[in-house]
Length: 111
Length: 114
Image 1 (cartoon, each protein chain N blue to C red):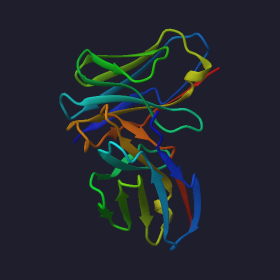
Image 2 (image 1 turned 180 degrees about the vertical axis):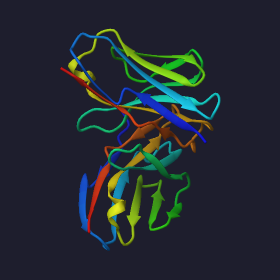
Image 3 (image 1 turned 120 degrees about the vertical axis):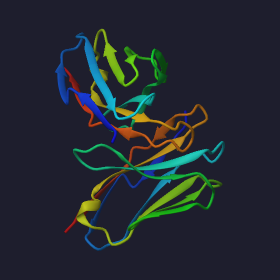
């Protein structure tokens, strides 16, 4: 059974703080890693798709890095805002062609 | 633009009762369709996916089934619900397939089996 782990499970930060969290995945047979953002009472929305070792993606204040050799990806949020509060999910694309999701990191940003 | 609908939004059902959850997609044709479930304390788990009408692949053996009677309609069913079927059910669609396919999720159905 493939394991995708995310840490921490939850995170509370103050507005303006920068933060980061981790997604760990199997380092063998890597195809792609997806990041999604899931706000309360909304649907998960895609943030990034990462395929190459060393990939770095950025969208506004959110960025992500990828290390396929050691099997981890970091998601960074610079200058967190209350609207960044959400659960951030990573998903590993496995050889059968499906996404294996982690349990997510729930971020709460206090104004 | 594309939209995805799911209903009902919430459902409370007794153990042993049947289930039917519906998902429809608008604004795209021949999408890949997916059913996921998030049980308490767990990540999103893929239950079924479909690449075309009548084509269903099951990822997790269980008492649920899925059908795709039309191109943009995906139905999740059960003949007899179990307590363990409680959870949040999400339908999603994608078009490109492959490792970079972005999946677009519906609003979800919260199911409580008592």
